[in-house]
Length: 431
Image (cartoon, rainbow, N blue to C red):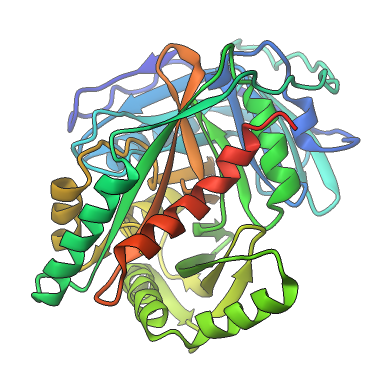
C-alpha cells in the first residue's frame, strides 16, 4: 500500500490495519548479514551503529510527499498508521513494535520526494537484546519465519567515476563567490555541496556498501532508505522516552595516516578560529531550534574532536529534556536545515545554495532515520552518502559538502570535499 499526496495536500487517511508482532530472537553476527540477497536495493533499510540498531526488508507500507509540507504530511500519515495498528510486542525496547524508516529531501523545491517505508520484516539489537518484527496487512498475526544469514554480497564490478553536475572547478568558483558574499555581509556561513557519479558494469549491491561502511566507520550510523545509502557521523536528533540528544559536527580537517601528525592536526583544529566559528554557528542553530520543545538543555562550552578514519571533526553533543509531545520527526523538522548543512542566517544561506550549487541535492543532507509508534526514534543527517539512479541499480551519485565562512579557501574546500567523498568511494572498491 502506498500514498502519494500532491505537494502541500492533506495525506489520505490510512484505511488498512497494520498487524505487527515482535518477539525475542537470538542474533548471531552482524545485523547487516541478515539482509537478504536479491532484494531490490530500494527495499533494504538500515540504521546500525557499532553492531546495534535495526535493519529490514520488504514493504508493508510506503508513503511519499514533497514540497514545504513534506514533514507535516509524513507525520500525519504515520499517526494515522499507528492509530489503526494492532501490535503484539513481546520485546518492548526502542526499535521493537511498529517502526518506519524515512528520508527527506534537503530543499522545499526538490524534485525528490520524502519517503517513509514500513518494512515487512525487521531484525534489531540493542544492548545485547535482539528481536524479530514482522509487519503485514493480514488481519491475523504475522507468521514468524526466523531469518537466516544471507550469502555474502559481491563487490561492484568495473566502477568508473565521473564529475556530476558540480565539477571540482565549478565548486571552487562557487566557494570563491560565497566568500565574497560573506565578506560583503550578506550572511555568515553557507554550506556548499558537490556530486560525483559512480557507474558499475552491473548492479551495485547495497549490502556490500553497508557492510564496508560499517566495518570502517564504527562511529557513524550506517543507513539505507529507499535507495539512499551512507554512513553519517551526525545525529540530527534522537528522542528516547523524554530524553533528547543531538550531535553537531562542523569544522573539519583531513587525516594524514600518521598518528603523531594527526594528533597535532587535531590540536590545531581545536584552536582554529575559522573552524570554531563555523562550529559555533551550527551548535547555536541546533540549541535555538530545540529550545521551544525542552524544559532543560545542556550545551557544552567547548567542542571535542571526533576522529574518523578519513577526517576529524569538531563535535558537540547537546542533551535536553522534552517539555512536550513533539515526536522525533517533529524535532528533526524543526532542526532542518541546521547551520551544519545549510548556513547562517538560514534563509539567506538556502537562497545562496540555490543560486550557486546548480544541482538538486535530493535527499542528501536531509533527515534520515527511523521512528516508532510513540514518536521516539533517531534521525541523522544524510551525509557521506549516495543515491541510486532511478531505475538503474548500476549507478549511484555521491555527495559531499563543506561549510564556507569568511576565512575559507576555495582549493582547501575542494580538498575537504574530496576527503568527505572517500568513505563512499572506498565502499565501492572491490579490494
